[in-house]
Length: 73
Image (cartoon, rainbow, N blue to C red):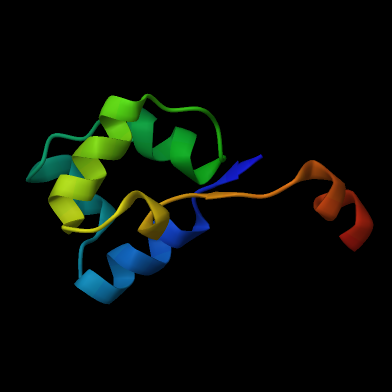
């Protein structure tokens, strides 16, 4: 599974809100919802977030093995 938990942490550190993404950078609310739900998004979307936040891909997303998730339950 891909987790976007790091995205929210990076946004907080850089002082970028969801409102800013929507109003200033024209990110669709639907894309933000997909990220909140850890659903798939295009590499173009990831690239846009890297440009906006001036960060690397690993500051936005992380792969978590499904087996690790099941062991934590």
